[in-house]
Length: 194
Image (cartoon, rainbow, N blue to C red; front, side, top):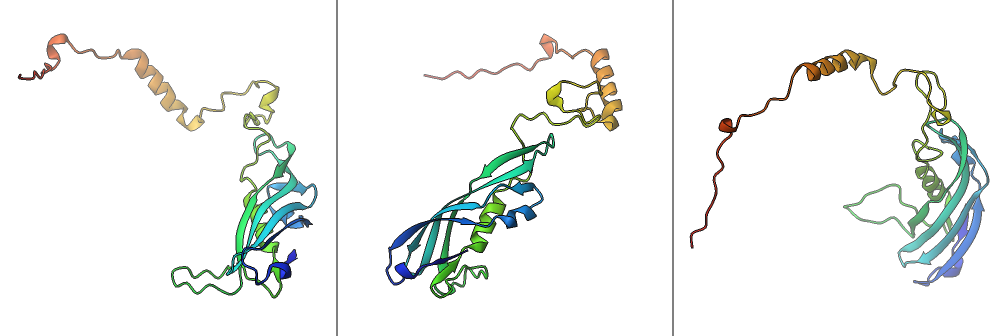
């Protein structure tokens, strides 16, 4: 995952564009990914900034997830954008002392960590096949998209059921209190003096 930058070295503002494919095996280590369906496609631009080389562009990777609600497999495309600068030498900045700086190695820059991090960060924590996926019944495991099951209402926590009954009884036995007209505080009105 290395790019040769010799053609723009020493020429501030010079750039080149590249389209490449990269191995996607690293993405299969993510627990959310069932499998990858091809390589990482990269469309990148590398620009000489004087202090280093700015890499910008878009990545895409087709993957298969298992929906976190209904557990069915579905395919989607991850499309993260990248923007990172590879420096010629470590930056000597007292305020920002970060050991993870990306550095130029001779006449090349190594894109492996940039691509892997960008793809892995774009993976959703809880992938869903569609936004309105109803999921599975927590009682019987039936897919709720096929219709409602005969289980009790899953929204009621059985530990709070006695409290629900108590609240229902309280609302049936007590009527809302109403204030009598003479118990209300008198409103003061402000009149402007002309």
